[in-house]
Amino acid sequence: MKFLGNVLAAIVLLIIAAPTTADAQRRDYLTDEEIEIVREAQQIDERIGVLVHAVDRRMAVIGLGNSANGRSVKEKDIWGPSPSGTRAEMLSDIERIIQKAIDDIDNLAARPDSAIINEDEGKKPKDPKALFSKAVRSLGSAAVRYRPIFNDELSKTEVKAERGLLLDIIEDCDEIIEAVAKLPTEMKKGKN
Image (tube, rainbow, N blue to C red):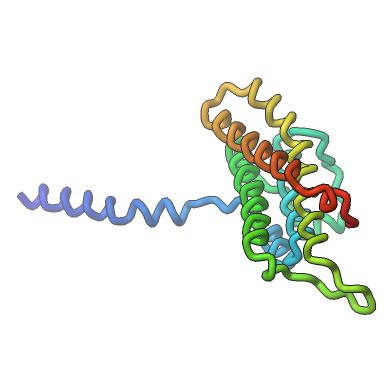
């Protein structure tokens, strides 16, 4: 009877502890250095540039695209060591970073008055609409560049989990490309 009570107590403990263990082991999709760079990049065009670069870093790690491996010493100091993980983890990071970029743009579109604009001394203040347009076009340009690479990887990949991640990334790229195509003409041609 005492043995059965101990087994039951152990099962209850496992059930209670399992969710916290999973949360504690959740992987960050950005490195600590990248998180700091994103925090500092409050202006939407700068933030999207940072997120696109973070995607490019992961693509370089898993050997996709024309990513430059020879980074300058200054960039290594700022961005820290290259991200690490399995191929599936890198693909998951890429999908989550792209989704963060989409969410950041969607949030700003829903609340345009919340735009943060860095004031440069002695220069004319930047137009929030121009910064938004620049950010959307920058993400769109990256999506156009990423889509064929990930589509090609999808045709080569047999691992089910990786295929699912690649499909999600391709879907995100399609969503971005479609959104950029709907931009008004004057926003597409706006000054950077």
